[in-house]
Image 1 (spheres, helix red, strand yellow):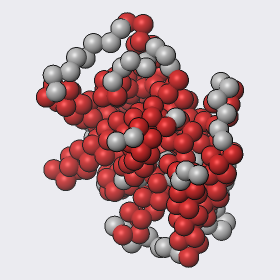
Image 2: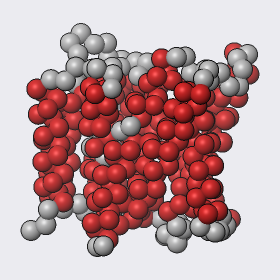
Image 3: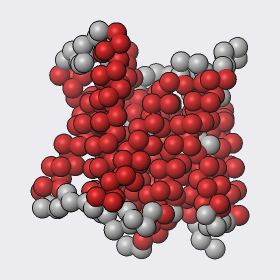
Length: 294
């Protein structure tokens, strides 16, 4: 199959799989599981899954010592994108946070332009159109409280994700590392970060290191989080960024909020409006416009 076709398919798969977050995370949060515990389990279980996959394929885990700093940076950036997004929910509505986080295709395009890799006019138009669609999908309700700190946290989340995509695509030092091995080390360093954050919370408040895990259903949701929005999303994200570039991959990330919206409607009985439908149509049309060749 053509590398571009694989890249586009993986980019869509990355967006859809990451958009499954609410399906597994929302019940856990509602039942009282701390976000740091949820993220620690999510990343740690993903590490075990990748190790099992690589062992079955008899792949080496070895990376050069000089590659570890960049792998650690990728792990921290990807973890930060989650941490800052969850933190922004404390200060601004989740709809506004989703809209601001989708600034990351703009950041990716600007960073690539600074590196003298200029996105085409078609790609820029797709970025603008998908952002307009996201604004329709995720606009906050009337009278919602908006604080500057929440806006700042959302933008930092978007910038962290954008930097992750660019480094995966442009780093010459990491170019020879297979996608599954790259994903493994990103998850390991992310797990270490969440473990440190949780340990800090426990020292500060005296809470148990693990709490909120009450049933087999909760553990099943954690497995779902580890498999779909983490492992599958990271693997397909790496493939897509390497095959079609970080800018187009970031535009395909629009399937994330679309999937999250549809999960909310179908599973959690959240309202669905004509405005939301229009946003979805605009997003899908803009992505189709970017993919289609002359």
